[in-house]
Length: 326
DNA sequence: CGGATTTGACCCGCGC
DNA sequence: GCGCGGGTCAAATCCG
Image (tube, rainbow, N blue to C red; front, top):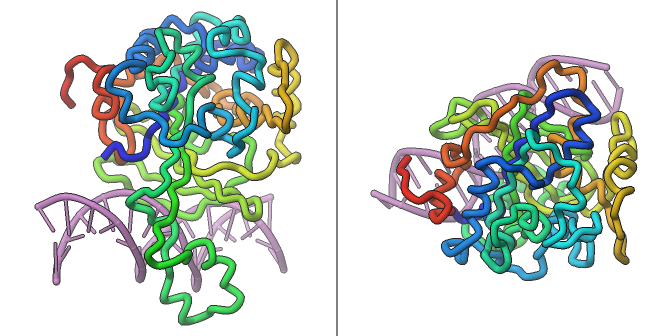
């Protein structure tokens, strides 16, 4: 069942104060001392092999994020390396724990010793070339019957070819402690569906990037085990920049507060904001400030978190969970 | 009025 | 083959 979540990022943003801490508290997977990170590091070994990247081109978090295979890596964007990421996030507060559990390359055990810091920078997104269940693109005979001319563009995206299985887009999931379901991430999304989730009282919402031709989708749902946790799953890669008309111009904020320090941007276009924008809790800083206690303080140990569709995390990352059953 | 959301129907893959 | 569950569509509705 753990077919897709090759990368799972668990964020535990803990903003004790207000906005400022948001930037300061950027702890991607920072130097947090939480048990979560420890767990995260645990995931770094053995049993992750089968969860490792399938596509070496996506060896970095950002690459996945932006769908580029150039040097747009998170570490690159922040001028950090897998082993020195802590530098970039030195401002991380102790209480601000963000958990990033990857199931990709970084956790793959290659070089993920026990430093969750490195994990993120080397994280990779799942890239499943030929996945089995690809239901994204389906044909719609009904509509076809009704209209076939003008609607072709729409169908073109979903009616590739009968036999030709739709390629699975790389995805990764965030688990974010948040009171709001749909975390602001800088992109414009249009909700196109909502479904009840089995074994969960909380529905799952489906969003599509509103930018033309951008294939990115995301699903948002709440963990039924810990309702305060929102699981956001991104699928696909944006082929465009973050819309400039962001509320509060978060992109600017981010680039200023985050990119200034030690960012040795490498060649090639980099959209640092994209990285950050993928970190909902960070991004929310700019938009959800009004909310009183937007963020909670603690994160349910992720061994208790249930992943959508894929069962418990320990099912996916057995090594991270010595022994424990549902 | 146009864009976004809601929501029930439909499609599809998978397991039994 | 059938039922289930997940994902998507699109008409209806909402909202600024």
